[in-house]
Length: 176
Ligand SMILES: [Fe+2]
Image (cartoon, rainbow, N blue to C red):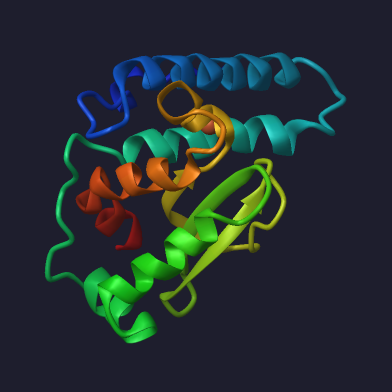
């Protein structure tokens, strides 16, 4: 049985309201519930959707904190600069990834084999993951992530808010 990880619920974010987070949190609880239901059956074809839906939301909520926590002079910062030239260039690329048409997630991954970084778009919760890669920064861009605050056309404004609330110390820990 999986439990809802209450300790991951972010509070007081810049331009992402408590009402928005509450709605989103209820959806996350739905994924935990469905994973537990599927555990009881031998037919788990939909496990990838439900399980990834649960875990990606946990990564997402965990990598948000009110006003953000800065990227320190860490190995991660060095890796970002080596890969994209600068933090700003990485951010531009990540934002573009987040604006990909369709429902899904923008994810900064690390390949644990060689510590290489790359941005990817995952459709729904399960399509587009790279086998063995580790998600280190996860941004939900399903409409439900911003509908309460920004309506259906508000993805860009929401992404802008997301970028202001990234908990880089969590991301640095995931990178290792
Ligand atoms: Fe979501």
